[in-house]
Each structure stands twice: as C-alpha cells, then as structure tokens.
Image 1 (tube, rainbow, N blue to C red):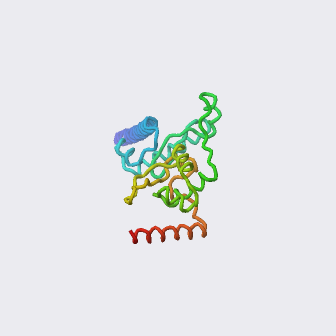
Image 2: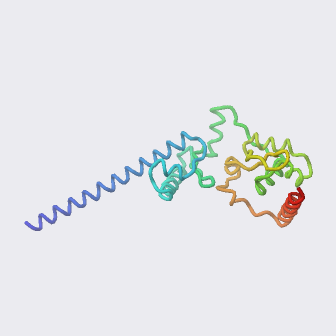
Image 3: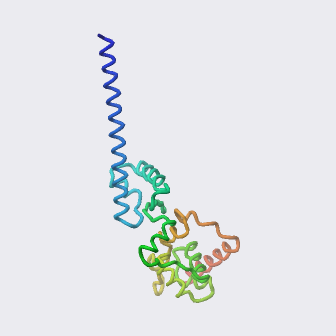
Length: 214
C-alpha cells in the first residue's frame, strides 16, 4: 500500500515538472513573439532596455532571448535576420535576398561613395562630433557636396550645433553607417594609422589653441 502511494506521488511530481517545462517553453515563445512584433512594428533599431521593459524581463534575460532569436533567423530558410547595433536590435532583410527585392520593387538606391565622400566619412567617424569647417581643414578642400551626399545616404546626421560664433552644425554617424559597414558599434572601427593619429592630434591642438585665443 505504502509503495503504491509513493509511486503515485512520484508520478504527480513528474507530471507537475513536465507541465512547468511546457509552461516555461510557452512563455519563452510568447516573449519571442512579442519582441518580434515590436521590432517589426518599430522598423528602426530598439534599445534592449526598452525591449526588456516591454516584456517585463531583466535586460540580460532579454538580451539572451534576442541572441537565441538571432540564431534562429540565421537559418537558411529565413529571409530576415536580427541585427545588433550598438546595444540596440533591429529586424533587417538578409543581403542574399536583394535580388528578390529588386524583382518585387524597382531597384533600391545603391550607396555609391566617391573618394571625397569616403574621406569626409572617415573624418566624421573618427572625430565626431565634428563641424564641416573642421572636415574641410583636414581635407584641404570644400566638402559641402560630400557631406550633403552622406546625409542623403543616411550615413551621417546632424548632432546639434557647436557653441561658437555662427553656431556651426556638428555631424556624426548614424545606425545606417554601422549597418552599411557591418559593425555593432563605433568601437568596432579599425584603429587609425600612425599618420592619421598625428594629423588628428595636430588638428586637436589647433582647436584648443583657437579656443584659448577667443
């Protein structure tokens, strides 16, 4: 009799544990679905802290869920992927799907960067926030067209204005810049060469000297 009772209790414990696992699995799927819905609706990258608050989870727990989702999206039969951009996440179309997009809509605008645009972009990436005047000092030529084209391509944006005479616009890179060059954050930028570092130091010293003379 006692043996039967013990066996019955053990079966109930196993059933309860099994139900808990099922419920836990369903809860994770629900959270994944919620995150997917948010990212799809937002379009742009969303900070992990905002996503965590939306599903009522800790930031680290949410990040781990997102990483597992990223692995699922990497499967060959998926047309989208989940990308991490400087602590934020975004749903994007996989690059290998480009040919199908061209057939569905007219060919998307391709970003074609001239040498002048690349020069201006590299200066902005390493020295941001930076003004157009500073860019032109380093390049030695006018950079209106190059900077305007970078803004048009959404690789560069206005960050504000410098507290100086004329209040020149300060420029910096965008999330699109990170996506375009396959980086998660600006920390992934390659280290500048020795000559470039010396040029930046010289420019910085000039800026400090000019500010002291104002």
